[in-house]
Length: 115
Image (cartoon, rainbow, N blue to C red; front, side, top):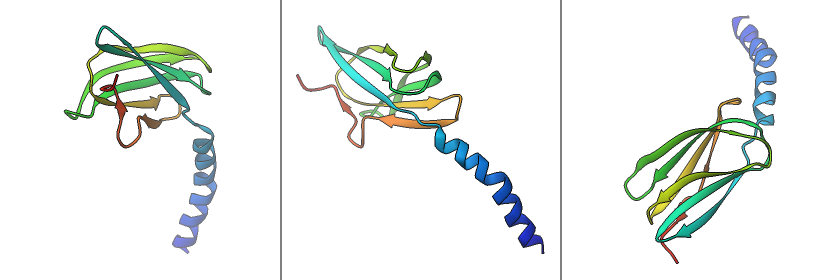
């Protein structure tokens, strides 16, 4: 009997939460600019307005080199990171409203070493 009650509670309470979580998506793109040997990264929010925690990871040394909290409107672009030295990087974005995250740069990272 207790097992049945636990399953019913999960179905009643768990399903609405899962449905809500699935509607929260992070869709960002980035662009890179180079000037005088240093790079800058601009983030563009494709779909969700709100507050986002954004971290820039240096994949060469495994450290976070910059952390920011940025407010975005849907479709808005923001120059997010300046004066980045050549290397490989990943951008971690956490939606503070939905508590979900995404990483930009793929498995090999964003390559800021080529001309």
